[in-house]
Image (cartoon, rainbow, N blue to C red; front, side, top):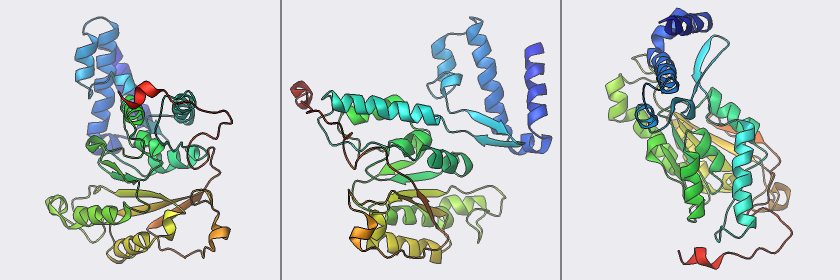
Length: 299
């Protein structure tokens, strides 16, 4: 009881009462995870029972909740260092010949993505990505080991997970129209009507927040007509969708200047950030000859 009282006192010191009431489910998750962890450490319950209450994970392995500056928000599961470490694991497998498939490594944009996901993304949102999707999936709440297993099976460009509303396409700008359609359904479909609907897709009549759609693409995909059409549709219909252009000044390895690119002044549904990529378009850029493990090809 003393520990529970101490936990409540800590929560009271960090989160205003009105926020505790409006985010009661999240506060309950904090309390439940803490209590289960203490019972596990005390030997009162086993690992399987504890994990069963938290989506198959122990409380300290699950997507956590962060309390900062008087605000209650879900934190990204992985830190910058953990994201980099994950890609290092994938790079090592590639360079050791354990991935006889094309792989596109992430790197150089950890800070920008952590900011986007921690400040904007919420559980229930939809995330669309492309061929370079590892960071997006992990920050959306995806499972590290599941992702690594997909990569080992040649599905680095084909990551799908309904549990976190995550979809990818290796087709250049292939998800833009799909993202726009999902955003339309969110605003006008059954889910929106049940919540009361609103002219503002982010603020339905009930006061709760409708799911938001996040569509990530590179500046190469920005050249495509599919992107232009989707942007016009989203902006024109005031849909809950943000297109995030991850500008690393290359389409494969061709710069915007070499492509003769004119910078279109996109509307407010398009967000852009610039970064210097750590890796080339595909592979790791290593200088040694890679010999792929033949047993993996036939497994």
